[in-house]
Image (cartoon, rainbow, N blue to C red; front, side, top):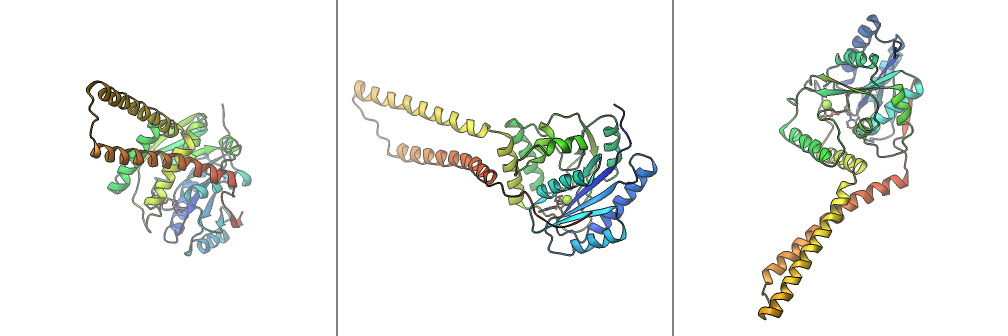
Length: 319
Ligand code: UDP
Ligand code: MG
């Protein structure tokens, strides 16, 4: 399939990024200029910033940038909705404004922005989705590195085969955005979707840089939330695990019960087992609560989906 030179949109989620945003936009404008001069994208290509309810100067800077150059567009959320919602809003907004493909990148430019050219080459070859794969995790703390690896392992074990070392740096085509719009889910796990949707996908490796200013906006609980959402959105294996575990526990207690009756009838000795009793009681109690917790995660997911609250609310939009 021969593709026309695309109109590219670059979306950037920003949460309290006053220290980064100007520099990042300038740098991306250089990349866009370079790509236009090489005739890889059209001159209508643009940048779309999503201010995820920042409480610092981020929005003022975005407005200022928009005034100077109308290639810079953006929206402001009325409060903080989280990075996934910000990316979602970016994808939906650029679909409305119009583009042939869209790249999402972080405001701290930790991802190598020059890889966008390689993304476009893959797009021209026919890929609908191009996933950026980080070459290493040198910039991550030990804690983040190990929890991330654990996350991929668990996800893959549970059958949601999301690619290792891909975060939200990717290019997707207009066609992918059209398909995305058919998904009504409120709690969306983007990485799962792009993997599951089944469109031609390409991978591009890139180097990760240090954050050049500001601090990471993720903490343990937001990462945990992301991981749990990923699991409950894309796998019901934990629920089956609960059922299977329950079955085997029941089976074991049945066998132990039979053995006790046998001993009583044949040897006339009732086994004494006060300690065993207490241990079993605690073990069963713990296992039951753990299983209830797993089921609870899914009930929570249902609860939030059923209420169908808006994914995000825009306060202002600059087109
Ligand atoms: N971000 C966001 N909303 C949030 C948290 C983060 O839009 O609630 C944005 C943030 O501004 C950045 C991107 O998500 O553009 C990735 O965040 P960060 O660089 O802090 O994460 P890390 O690189 O440490 O994983
Ligand atoms: Mg970062």
